[in-house]
Image (cartoon, rainbow, N blue to C red; front, side):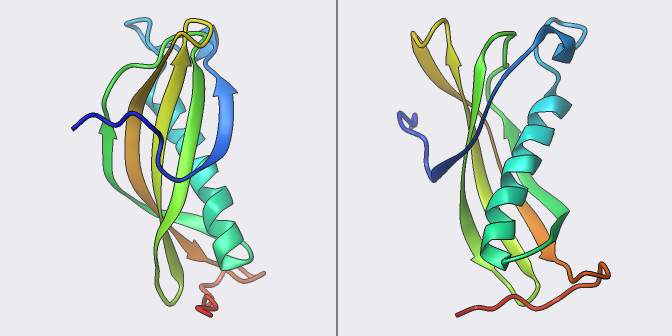
Length: 127
């Protein structure tokens, strides 16, 4: 089944730049991953109502390459909430060629732990 619309809500949009390419001329996967981590941090911090840190990346899947000048759009939603952690499902899409096409390029589930001011785990209010 091919997805035709992003799932979740729009969290982050940025443009892929020439400085971010790998040896093959595609945008480096680590750059895409870092953008997804930023987006996941935004979603999880909102849900945890405070500071969070990435603790795991599950099921990361690169579907298509990202090209220079693509607009990378990250969509996210909370998948589950634990006692001290939040798992966020993230989908990355690109807008290519002046908006001519939109394609899903990456997906994954990022888990964040809620932290207090000293950097220790803290419980998340589940109400």
